[in-house]
Length: 137
Image (cartoon, rainbow, N blue to C red; front, side, top):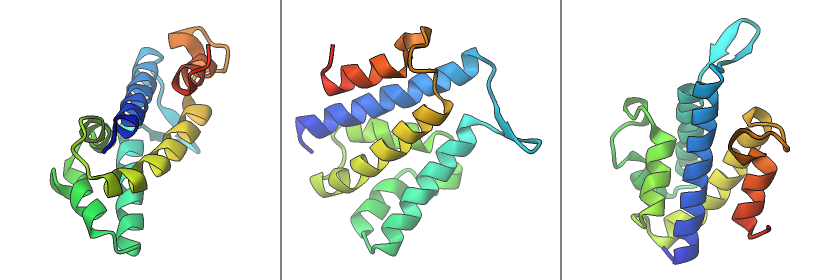
């Protein structure tokens, strides 16, 4: 992995931690039709999605990376763990090249749906957060 990939993974890790902190701070549990969904539910869904997609594409190196800590169902914070290992440079360039763009799209989409409003003061708001990642001031 190169430095840019590690930086991107570190940004995504901070974004995910920020969203988790927001959900805890606000006592948030997203609900739809009487069903409550927590951040941990999203963690498993996101990780399962990446696992299924990499298996369909026959990317055994990505599958092995995702499952190195054991079955995803047994990993309480699968997304956080994956991002931490990526930011530590524990993945090959091929694994990072496949995972990072997909994780970026997924987590940015999640942040837009579940994060604070663009101008919200909580942790700088998502507009400020995205600007810092892109190098905007």
